[in-house]
Each structure stands twice: as C-alpha cells, then as structure tokens.
Image: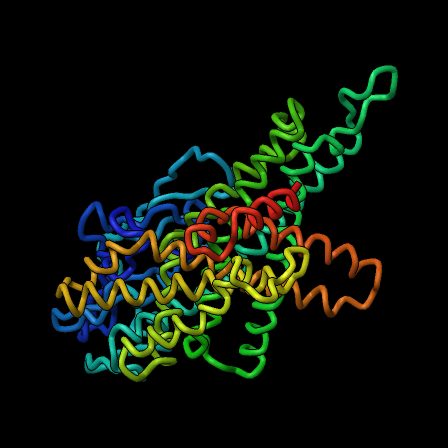
Length: 458
C-alpha cells in the first residue's frame, strides 16, 4: 500500500502530520497519528494489505527533517491487524469498485530503524541525520521525482479509456442510421456533421497524446537504462506532470461525448462507456491534482526562462518580445508571406507563439509583483494561477502537436502517413480554433483567417 494522502493534506505533502519519532534506545521509529487530520485516507487495499509505505515527518530530538517514507506492517500473513494499527473501509465510491480504499491510523507503532527508506536521508544508530542532499526543499523534490513513472502510467491508463470509448462510439456511429433524403436509405449517424465534429477531434487528440506519451516513455526508459536519477531530469518530470493533467481531462471530455453520441445505449453498463467514465473520473485527482501538476510544468518553464536570460530580466523580456513580433504578423494584413492554414507549419508557429507570449507575460507579472510591489512570493504566485494553468496547457499543446508532426514525418507507410496527416491537421486546427479569441486579441489572426480555421474544423 502507498500511504501518503491524509485527511488534512493531499497536494501539500510537506504539510503531512503523521509522525515518525526516532527512539535511539530501541533503535526504532515510532509511527503515530497525532490527530484526526493526520489519518491516512483513500489508501488502496486498506482492508487486505500486509504492509504500507507510509509518509511521515521524520522527527529527531524534537526537530522535523521533513517527510520521509517508512515500511510499516499493517497485518500478519493470517490477516490479523498489527498492534496499534486501525483500518477503516471508506465503502462506496463512484468507480474503481474492485479497490477497497480506506483509512489508516497508527497509535505509536514501532518499526525498526532499517524500515526507513533511506535513499535521500538516513539516521545513524546514535540518532544523527544525514542526507546526500543538504537542502531540505531539494531533498523533498527528489523524493517526489519517484512519482514520475506512476504519473506516466496513469497517462497511459487515461489514454486506454479514451481509445476504448472512441472505438465503441465510432463503431456504433457507423452501424446506426438515422434520417436521410426522402425516399432513400437513412444515413449513418457518423455522416451527420455534429456527430463527426464531436468524435473526430477527440480521436486526433488521442493520437497526439499517444505519440507524446511514447516519447516521454522513451526518455524515462533511457534514464532507467543508464541508471540516472529522475531528480536530475526536471524537463521529463514537468512533461509527465503536464501529460497526466492533459490526458485525464481530455479523457473525461471524450468519454462524455462518447456517451452522448451513443444515445440510450451509451447509458447502459453493458456498453462499457459508463464504467470507463466512473473508473477514470478520479484520474484527475490521484497521483497529483491536475491543477497542481500544471504548476509543476510552469515552475520548470520559468526555471528554463531564467537560465535563458541570465542577464537583466527586463532585457531578457525585451529579447523574447522581439523574437515573437515576426510570428505575430504571420496572418495579419502586414504579413508579406503568410503561412497557409492547411499547412502544419502554420499551426506549429501558432502554438509556439502562444506559449512564448504567455511565458513572457507570466514572467513579467511575477517580476512586477515581487520586485516592484514587494508581494510575498506565495501571494504573487497565487494571484497568477489562472495565467499559470493557461501557460502550462499551452506548453503541452505545443509539445503534443510537435510530437504528432514527428510521428507523421517518420511514418514509413504512405497510406498511413496520409491518414495521420489528416488527423494531425485536425488536431492543430482544433488547438487554434479553441483559442481563436486569444489569437484575435493578440492580432496573430485576422477575422478572415479565423473564419477559414472555423471552416476547416467542419
């Protein structure tokens, strides 16, 4: 079992309240739940599991060294509860009925000193704490880097649900007929414009996420093969965090449309779409709340931005601004050679432009709030959260489109490549169409070009 989340703290893991106090006399850690808010909640396999990896504040001589992970016995091999451990079934949920999520509490449960998972911090027999990472914040981030593979696995799970829902809905749409010209056979509902417009963009998105997830998986496999610590690959952590959020949100949106596009049959459990919806709804929450995941993405983007412009921040902003002016004029009346909206180059430049402008704008806002207005860093960040989420999604849109384009270019079968090209163009069109108001506000698109993009979606 993996026991991190508590009643009082989920996303803010630093704030967990479960204690692990070291007793030098017995060479043991005392795992304790000091209050109701420290109860471990939503823990999978609570009612059957024998051991749990419990995150708790490591306390030595009354001082906390931050959250660490401990192996704690829950039951013996006969299913008898370990002394001091209490497990409570949380009973009914929307989905995942095959998993018994529950609550764990600990009443001064003693575990050997060796039960501390000590890759990032250890305690000697005389009670001295040591870590290869001196900075407490960096140490904490290193621990959370271990969640990267499970977040990527969750992305593939969401993608699997999305693909299955689309397969069911599209096949149904090709088999069912409704309405048609007078005195002629009714037409397949997939040929109705609204049905087509609801399902095909989701299919294009599923393909984009597929290629990007494979790309992330290859990066992860390379790190594992070369025995490299994930903590040193911040771009990969950020990419996976963003993919987790994007894929799980897109999955829910897709499954809802699939349910509606299959009519009354889509409401029946035998159709499988309702089950997929119920089981995957929680994906947006576990392994990291989606909004928190997007903040991980942007913190890395800002770190890259800072490294790119180590000179005066103002000069860096100006340089970034001038590099985007040419893109802004791509489709304006001032453009000499505008890109065609039927060309992938147009969409690649558009998503790059959007990400750069949002990144520059966020950096400028944060700089003004902290350096000029002297706002506290948390308050400054919190007041920009909507901007943060928008930038993170713009980044993921750009990466997924780029990976889709690379997949099209590397496809060895001409017929398959031609089909992939159609869906890649549809995905790029969808991204720009959904944000056309933003592009019009920033004068990247003219009204005429926006109308052409709308027609291309249809």
